[in-house]
Image (cartoon, rainbow, N blue to C red):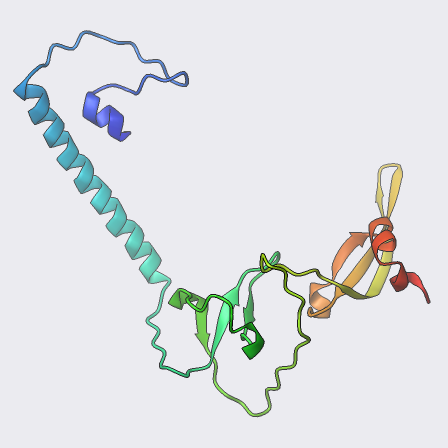
Length: 180
């Protein structure tokens, strides 16, 4: 039950739920005692719920320990899916505090070469995605209407992350992709 209902013995009167109001004759120390008992009961149940939810969350977590100068991946969730990002020195001005569950230890391998093109980052830490090329074209048919679609490969993304876009919108904004 809701805390209001537990405290006052009736549902909260609101436009959503109008409860029948009966006469209440409890006054003085009785109502204070009842209210105190109900508050204690609510606190116990809320504590039990917190413990239960914490146990659910802890089942999915594992203990992680990092040392100073450890290389880590930062798990981020952009528009689609979850990717990992190794912050380059050029982004050292970004907020450097993350919850430990977002970090994954990096094991150094000399064959790993991280190359990146610098991004033009706006003040609100967003950037404009730029298309590299059109990978595929097709028409989607809905009842009597046909919509031309293109599959666009975006800069800084793999071919698997290419997206289907409306040909008209891409043509208006990035006409150079259709010159060939």
